[in-house]
Image (cartoon, rainbow, N blue to C red; front, side, top):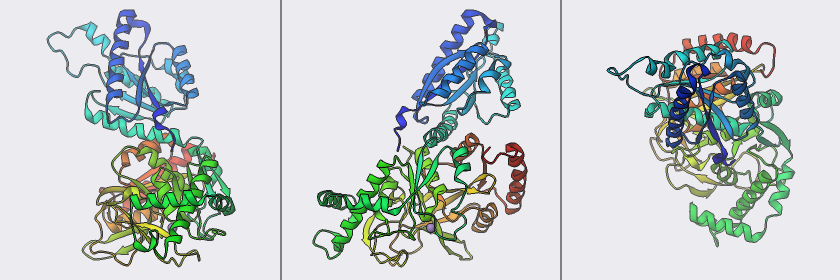
Amino acid sequence: MKDLSQYELWFVTGSQHLYGPEALAKVAENSKKVAAALDRSPLIPTVVRFKTVGETPEAIRSLCLEANGDASCIGLVIWCHTFSPAKMWIGGLSVLDKPILHLHTQFYRDLPWSSIDMDYMNLHQAAHGDREFGFLCTRMRLNRKVVVGHWEDTEVHERIGAWTRAARGWAALQGSKVCRIGDNMREVAVTEGDKVAAQSRFGYSTNGYGVGDLVERVNEQSEADVDALCDRYCDEYAVVDSLVKGGDRHESLRDGARIELGLRAFLEANDAAAFTTTFEDLHGLKQLPGLAVQRVMADGFGFGAEGDWKTAALVYLMKVMGDGLDGGTSFIEDYTYHLHPDGAKVLGSHMLEVCPSIAAAKPALEIHPLGIGGKEDPVRLVFDVAPGTGLNAVVVDLGSRFRLVVNDVDVVGPEEPLPLLPVARAVWNARPDFKTSAASWIHAGGSHHPVFSQGVTAEMMEDFATIAGVEMLHINERSSVSEVKKELRMNEVYYHANQGFSFAG
Ligand code: MN
């Protein structure tokens, strides 16, 4: 994963020359205090740097151009302390290509009832200054988040923090690379898509590699490195007896370790943020990569199985967005149902490649046969996913545009042990209920390959969708199938009208 500590938000305050230097000095002083408070907030996971008070069209435009050219700047937090005639902002905002958060706040929380005079009123004008600024953003049809409340409130920090994570994800996605090892699973529709449109819309590129490129890296790993990695496995996981040194399957563990070392070398050599594999193209690999994929995903790489490059990019994005939060993020699959009348549940899993960042406890490292792929038995991490709230998310390519689908879920765990199911397992209730969730997801065209996260929230996903300018359908506890169908039809009109005839917007 990229070094996320390089990123910062720029705090910019709107004002004008009308009030004179004394008032402007006060505006700058107060703005610095607000920016410093946001910078200190543990809920906002990046540096917040006070940049300037925008007082003239020229200064505002030059600031926006500077933001565009600075890779560390992930977005602008803008607040109008006083009135700031918004025509001054047209030149700047029309060239700005960084995300915007409009913070609608006021320096003092309470009115000083007994001492308030017109000087005070002139200095603290966000109530109308921010509305002037908001009008212009709406008139210019700018995608942005508006956060309302006093700048010292925890709730305000939470709203800004969620957007910061989305803006950070957006920044990391720009120019990132998805390596597609092999093509997608033959005849599968949903893992296909328009890579040119995806690059134009989301900023990441997807390019193909032969599995031989990976095999070459696997085969050049040294025996000593393979043994050292096997020792690390024994430190980190509950390794079954047959796989440890001296066990009758130890060579299979060594093969798994060799694949992991080769995969890491391949990803590094290609500057990859994410990758895909396909079990239909494994020539030269002894096993379908299971353990290796699980472990590199845990280190922040995006992954999609069966050539699913859109999901691979989404895993990477959500890992960046959720970095530092308690819950993990993984590629997963809606696998099998429990259709009991007292409450249907979904068993989420995959044949191997689920990230241990969502494990409830120390994973077991095991070996079992796998019918798919036609290779030797693959080693894999086996675990249950921790109970608690989470979400599933997918990006759908509708042919002319992209749709993000998000569904809130509650992981409940299996009702009984699953002794014969040697993979990672997540059992969840989907909100608002199984039938509404599944019907809505299917109407939306959502794939069976969601990204599951217990750290990233629907608010962060919505903020990302706003930055990217794509539709987001959020299936949640208030959803009904008929409302979802209406929303999908409305969105069809809006997003097509909004992007005109352009493929990628
Ligand atoms: Mn799959």
